[in-house]
Image (cartoon, rainbow over all chains, first blue to last red; front, side, top):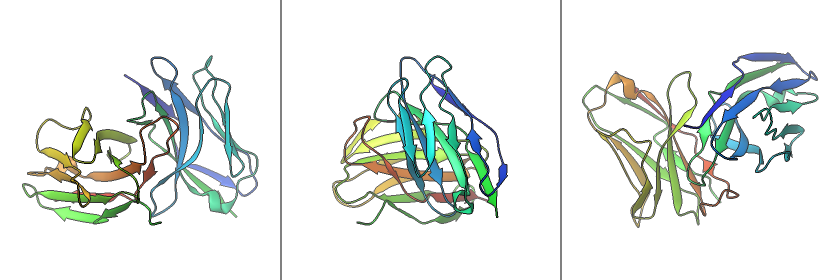
Length: 111
Length: 115
């Protein structure tokens, strides 16, 4: 079955540091790929998505590129802020009905 | 427009009791999804419902778990005779449609603890 593997946390960075959270997927065919973010005490929010190979999703300074050859969708941000502290989930979907999630990566950004 | 509302936020049940988790989708959304997050794991799909219909329950345990989304009122995830292994966070999401380009909006989750 489909699966998503993402970098284990927790990750702790200083403000303005560069962020990478790795994500790889296994799936039959070409799924859509997503990054969700969960701030403390809140539900998951869609951060960005890409629906086909070589697409780049971007939002709020975060970026991720759909790499078919390496089956990856790594999340990057050039300069993190304290307000980016949250749990980040990578997910894939081949159907509109269900998402397959990674286990989540806790990010803490220190001032 | 209020987001997806789940209640209760926290629920404690003794082994053998029943747990009822409620989810009110966003206004105008007729598609509801339930996910479960066990400790240290990612969210796992459980069931997908439209009004009065279960469309896909491939992720639901075969026994003790059931879900409904009636014509009126919230979607309900029901767990009978709870066991310690049911302790988890249960998330509901809703969407206006089911296309891949359609975003699903998530609630804050219900954290179930079985003692």
